[in-house]
Length: 416
Image 1 (cartoon, rainbow, N blue to C red):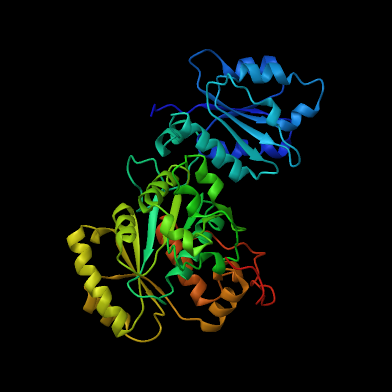
Image 2: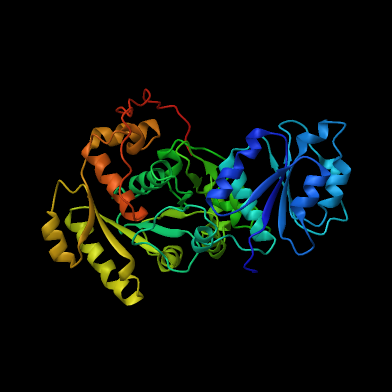
């Protein structure tokens, strides 16, 4: 892949589409809007100029707009066509096009449009800017902490794992992803890798026919990556488990792991919630992870199996990636005794809050969203985990933030 980041040319008159400019700029990708042939010529530059284009199909409704000439000049440019909310542009397809052409339906939010544009850049064989490149261009980038990956421009892959079911692993993963997106404004993807019985969709009240199955088929390409995710109100994206359990057997696990590696080129943080098993999929995920959050509860069964896993992790060469998270830390075996037994320090503890946790699950929300002022100890503990993964101090609480009241319990709400 050539180490060149192209300019994004936006052919649109829609201010909502132009909002993507700031999102791209924050990631070191330059863009410019054009509305005339002369502006398009200047934007495309010479034959060696690298460009991709977004063509808003709604401009075709203007009889004075030179649609044919625009499409002719964009024939050799990788193109994303935005289809109107109603109708299609199937008649405009150019059989002589020599580059990638993709489609997306309006309305489309800037964060999703930015993902589609980045997928277009990668599919064209060009590179996305690294942190170092973005800093050199004068674009301010978020500060990085202990999880900085050196020269690796890809996002960080954090795997949340436990050797025992019922440890609160999925709740921690969901709050971590929501916290990274809403508190730090990181481009964040939450992946449900418990392909048979994952409940991330239930915890976040998300339902969709889109899922990880869409990126694990024979005809899946890089454009399938942003199409498969579901947006969450926090700003995070979510890759749900397959809705049909029977389709899990058809899913190619290597393709799933490969897809997560490719998602790291599109997101700053990829958070993976796993099944409590040491199967082939989890071993691959643990090997590829940049950090592993190992969740343990203060009880003898969990402690015994966690000790067994730590011995295995040493032999697998992944022990240096581990950060131990003690859930329900205010009950059962003390943190000190647990650390002595396991021979590893507790990186973060999360207290119990049974009723509040139950309300969050039943409402399909997270504790971070329910308690934005972080008045409850459990919310403070969860935000501390977010801070640890982000590598930055917690953002200050805004004065107007109040205790999240939540909505009435919706026992008949959507389920994944």
